[in-house]
Image (tube, rainbow, N blue to C red; front, side, top):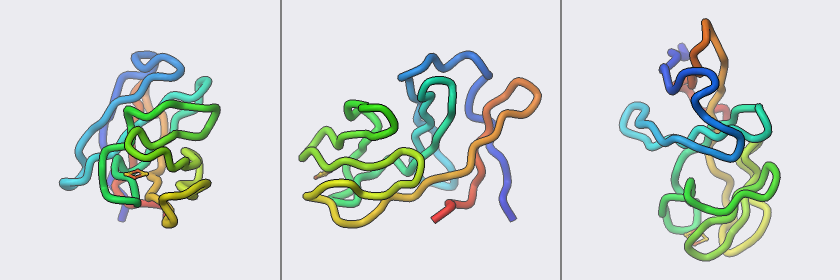
Length: 106
Ligand code: FES
């Protein structure tokens, strides 16, 4: 059953910003993209490096190491050198807090 982890106060993450938190030993990056929140595993599927510091392009993120692109909404890989998707996590806003579900969506 999904548990919900308190990740941030609503409004504390400006559009384009992110925050990384640990969920059950996994680094998960929470993004604010134009007021919508998305959470992905903070590990590139190419070689496992952190990805949250990568450049954003709309709802896409570019891995800072070798440039693979991923969709923040779905975790789908969009360009090589990565070929596998990355995990996404459910996000909700409850009582003024942004919460991330502990069970990956994919
Ligand atoms: S580590 Fe992300 S593309 Fe190589």
